[in-house]
Length: 131
Image 1 (cartoon, rainbow, N blue to C red):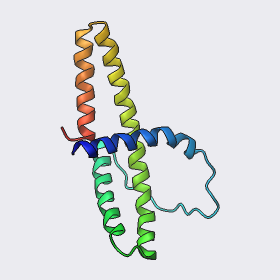
Image 2 (cartoon, rainbow, N blue to C red):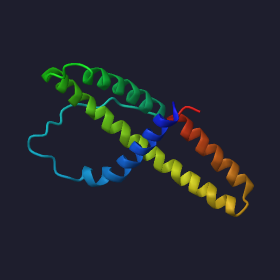
Image 3 (tube, rainbow, N blue to C red):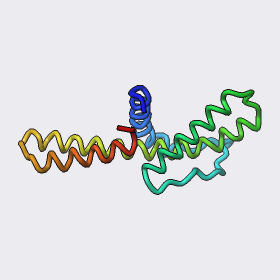
């Protein structure tokens, strides 16, 4: 993944993390249809695969005429996009905490903790962005 794409994923993950809880408790407008299931993911790797595939489908749909059937398809894709971005935001938050702990451990010259936390961070981030 290129640097620009990496930064975009991180920014989106942060935005979803910051805005998700406030939006999640909002009452849904009466005209909002909520009847599609998002693609499920058991891991962050599967979440990223779902996101890439769904992004490609959205890009293809937006490149066309975008008629009523396309809008219907985009509506169904939005569930997977929303769930994927929420999952990424959660993962980013956990990784941020790991880096903060590593930072604190490095200030105390705690070598083993720095190594363990640094390794955990790299293992986690490499599931989201390619090394």
